Image (cartoon, rainbow, N blue to C red; front, side, top):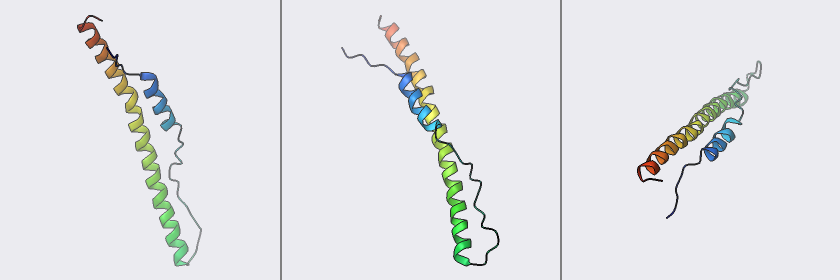
Length: 87
């Protein structure tokens, strides 16, 4: 018989790797005063990209933290199942 169980340690390692990503917070790029359209547009694109990347990092970290929670729930279910089968 194959034993299947949840490994909380692996789930914690996954979450730690995502949480190690530092989020710059999307502080924004400022070029001072310029009237060059391409430079202004470039700064705008960089600010948008920075904001989107910040949201991506935050969301990734939030989702990664769920791995540990799910693993703990599965471990509890495994223990209950094992007890009901007399293991």
